[in-house]
Structure formats: C-alpha cells, structure tokens
Length: 115
Image (tube, rainbow, N blue to C red; front, side, top):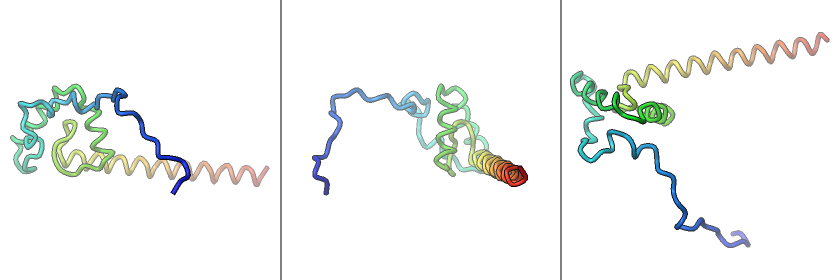
C-alpha cells in the first residue's frame, strides 16, 4: 500500500474517438455475424470482404487484427487463410532480420578483436 492517495483522471476530459467507430462493420444496419462466415463458404467470405473494401479504416483494422493474432473471421479485408499467411510472412521477415542483426554484431565483434 502506498502512502500516496490513488489518483484518477477526471471523468469530464474528452476521450478520443476509437478508430473502429468509423468502420463499416460497426454501422447499425450491418450484421456482425457477416464477418464470421464459414470459411468454406466462398460467397459468405466474399460478402464480408465487400464491406471491408469500402471501409475507411480497412488498413487499421487489418493491422490491429494481425497484431492481436485474430484467427477467426474477416478482418481488414483478409480471410482466415490470408491472415495466417501474412503472419507467417511476418515471422519469416522477423527471423531474417534477427539473423542479419546477429551477423552484423558478430562482424563488429570480429573487427573489434582484430583492430
């Protein structure tokens, strides 16, 4: 327990509007279940993607879903298989970057020892 009283931000401060509030999928006339189609139903998947194509926050949604590791549904215009493929590419790129950084560090160490 702290000797200082707990501080809280006043509730009357303006809150930033969350980016998702501008999403097409958040509109009252859009059924949220549309974005969780059966993956083997190409027409249902395409219907979800058609909403995403006209969404002003499509890329933000996609990035957020990839960062959260979403495995189910259509997010930012990508279906489950596409999300999985992008995550695989990201892991490969990160591994390649890590290997390059390790090699660069080893080269610097070798130069420092030689010099």
